[in-house]
Image (cartoon, rainbow, N blue to C red; front, side, top):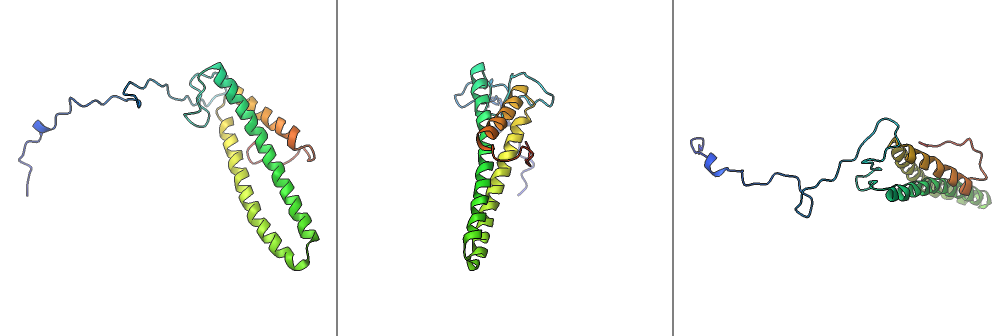
Length: 166
């Protein structure tokens, strides 16, 4: 059936509709957008770290965020040390086990090491994204976290070690 001759304009009045951007409370949402700097800066105005919910709104939130970033950096080094210890334990277990059990132990360990490798890489890329805020305070916190983590967890390894992103 052809409806092209009908006038739909009288029933399509949208003037009463509210097209403004609202927050959940019905009021205008004046939250500033996160700034994405591609140049090195120490400015924290509209700074978000990885997520829009991780927003720096005050000196206190900057301080707490920097402490969290240091902890994340140290946590990465703790994870790396945990992986090294796991690999060492597997090597000892393989060396001390009967020959017929070695293949099974190595096969199981390979699956575990694969998962740990994926976790380590995800963690490293997230730290890289934090670093890529190009904010000097954040970059310093990442570096301090790596140093603190190495101090606490990496004392028995050489300093020249591979890192995925940081």
